[in-house]
Length: 376
Ligand code: GLA
Image 1 (cartoon, rainbow, N blue to C red):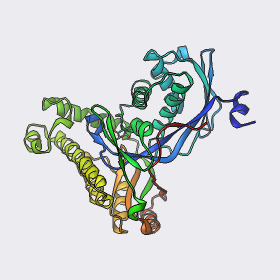
Image 2: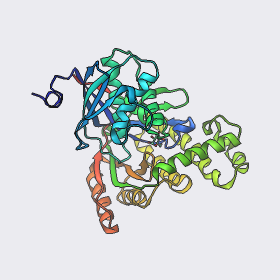
Image 3: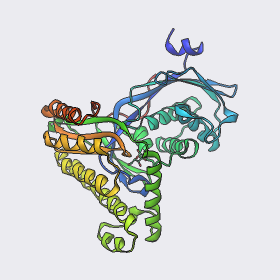
Image 4: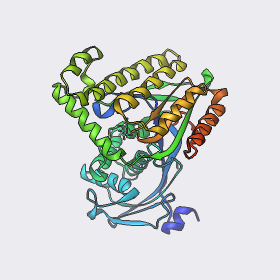
């Protein structure tokens, strides 16, 4: 008997997978309706699922170490489901709220996206359930529609005011490509990125720290950006052209100026990075990544001593560029390195961490992988 049948006493109807992501550049631009450039990781959350017609949603996760969580669809409401189960439950709630005729399910989750590492394990969890439900209940929803429902689950059900990048990355990325996404209208282009062909590799250094102030600070930064846009009479900071920044800054209270500067310069870094990739110059991403980190550290102030040290140590070890990825306050750093140097850069970052008294970072290699899909 397979693991699903052992758990639920009947076979699954199928298995789906949705990946975590790293963002190459374009951080904190998504809720400002700007550009982002994520790639999907080979690491995924996987769901085996079978429908139920008795109004129950049963959830089990290999990573949680908890028994099956049993929920009544009729009881699903924002804030009602604590912990990891809130993400899958929120997706089912969002589907029903949007008027889709979906019932319950038995769901068995497993995966290898590190949690709390800034690699979007929660978006992967939402997206795998959204993709499974769309197939099982024959909803015929597109990948962007499912990404929006997953984001709604996180915003309205779990209560995290995230943007759309992580869900779009998990749903829409393609192997060998970065997703150049305009978050204002969700138009997207797959930009080929052949790191191996250029003798390069992208290291992911998970600092294994997550500073507590992250959740409240994210919401506060988002509110600050929205306030700045409103004061400037703009629908979103994305609408401010780089040439207009100096004049705009002069009109704003001092505490909002660095936020605006980060968003405008970061948005420009995304289009610059895409131009280099499309011209077949992936190594040129290096200085763009490093400039992005400086902006997140000095202007947006979402880095922390551990991510700053990982970036610095990677650069000293010969990385072409490095930056924190994701929301910040801990999490992971990406470093663009010569493929032959990957091991020694990882080793030097590890010894810098040891010398600083930090726990050893976990190291992965990011190979641009496929978005959400049915496995069987
Ligand atoms: C988190 C959010 C995303 C995005 C990033 C920062 O990952 O979920 O929507 O805002 O932070 O770029």
